[in-house]
Image 1: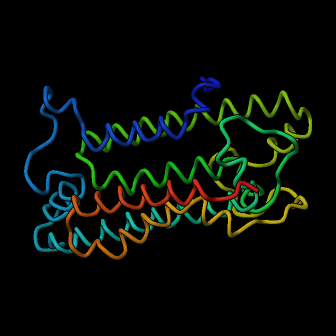
Image 2 (image 1 turned 90 degrees about the horizontal axis):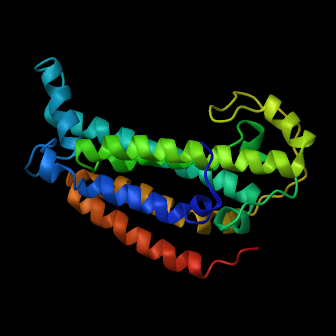
Length: 244
């Protein structure tokens, strides 16, 4: 079940392909799983469902707002987690096309869980899923979750082979995905590089801003275009971001 070196090298592209398929849902042309219209995305579908659960208790506007707040919180939690992890792991390692394993990093979020970067991507997926057709949202959440597990298995096998007992001892104390409430290991002497971390995660910070500043328009298409814009800007930022 572990990812191949090819999958790890092109993990950013694979994530992008999954999200594009989620937004376009090409299978719907033949299967007709999703409804049509301006509110045929998951946001509108869930809002309509919530407003009908108990007529009069939750208005359609309130349902839209609740879902928007939830998606924005998911985007915020994801970027905080990834920025925290990137600061301690380093931009060079986060953006590298190959696996690294010089020593066990037991600092920052890595004292609470072993894979904060992958957990951040998974949580981020829930925010983007709100803008997708329902079938595309389900596909993206399942596909991203499955791919993250493959990447985790591949990295952990690599680190076990490279670091041996020290990494196994770390794994025995720190959870793989679900964070512990308290630090599980002593902090290693790693100094965070916050500026590079924020630049590395510029795309995700941009998504938070798009949801927070443009969500009031209740237009999934506008938000999707905003996400594409911040993606393009982040690629430029990352191209000029020093790796060390």
